[in-house]
Length: 273
Image (cartoon, rainbow, N blue to C red; front, side, top):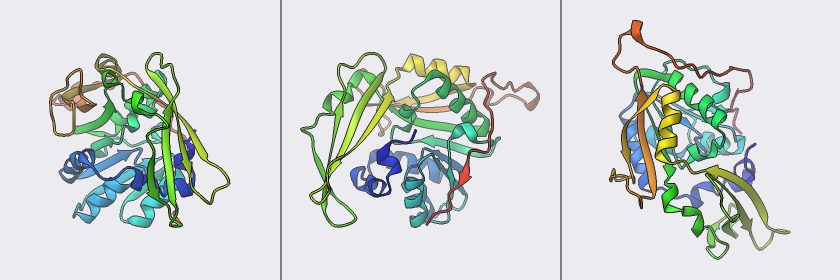
């Protein structure tokens, strides 16, 4: 299910203002610019790929997202990117991309083990033999959800000129890896607030590596922030640079993981406005 803040056209229009370009975007843009064919999974408004195209990237840029309202934003900004409506469970790309990325903690929206296995198997299948899969997740040891309180209100200008007030609230107590929270939007001329309910998963390194290994992927580099600092107990991020586990093997000796997926006709190209 697509969260209301992603599926509502008005709220999708606020996304980039609420999430201004930052160090994480610079980190991923550098990777994108050095790869010929790139897939951005959970691309949202497509800001990363759009910036890469405007910066002179001449190769293949593909963004996939399950929220049509977000893709409309991307297509309006740049029609020279391939926008795909759907998710990894309904794709059939095979060895087509040098780089697959999941940015903005999109990886954390995969909350179930089976959902993660299917997604990682699809990523592995889509990578060329020497390709890389790079993603970020919040470090659970940093306990970011403790700062998600109604007192921390942000204000951004809406499309109609009114200031929109936005705040988050984690549902406590938090037990285990999954954190549920609300994101609430309010503006002076609205009848009332609009609230989105979400659940994300905070995975530690050992669980991440187990799931990657099951999918036939191996971590090559890992950082604790977007400046490529070491991962420590207090690091805010877990940034993983991974590759196919069979990388460097001959074609005859490559082994595909057992985890699989079923392709379907559920995906659709985003027609745009």
